[in-house]
Length: 361
Image (cartoon, rainbow, N blue to C red; front, side, top):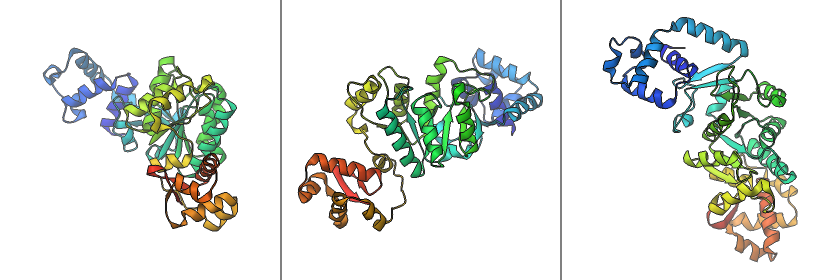
């Protein structure tokens, strides 16, 4: 670890906020200058910044590094500082990025194409099934899945990704030395064993506090190209992830739910406010994120399709067509066609583009 990274690690260990770090960083051409500048007051820093710098300069950084790295080795943790090559650019672009990420597992996943999938801790049977299907399809398409390792939807995301040998990231709200909830410790270990990653902005020994779960959500949303919300109540913490997603200019996808279900009050309210986020198939997400998936074998796909699906594929052979055009050519009800197209999208046979037009993959 070079001197600049070591200074940032010290800042992180001493709970320096990013806004304070920004002030310090803006005052010096080189961060290492703060260790040698003769008159700190002349650096035009406010009193609190001067005190932080004085404290840093009184520290034996070599001893600090040995102590911290011994602790990291004990828990097999790799600290990734703001200036590390492994620190993801997509995280630097948010308003309050963590100075240090404490990681365990494959740190290269931080730079991979990924999708955040979040939702209620108490999913309905519908929510569970939908989450399982979407997680598997998005993972098969090559996306790394991201969740918070909480009960419910988060747990399903991690489990189902691992089931198909996919890669997943779990973002925690406390130190990596004690997994929360403790019942998911086994799952956390499986994530690492299967090439996944655990990550947090909190050093070892830091227990998760309630407000940290909300702060954690800004990292969950920032690491993904977009966020998929499966089920969420109106006052759910998941709603904060939706807000962070929009603030960070990421894509937001929301699955509609039963209008009488408390677990869908939040998701349905979001769709009511922003109809474009309405999502009923993984292929829509892949299309919006511009993720290219391997085309299925055409003959095999036709064998798997039923008669109506085969006719749809034949109609789209000549090029894309609108929903109404396909409906007229098949002479079937709109509800039946809608069901068939959703199924075909999920299995990668067709894709919906702009203007309600469908085309064959």
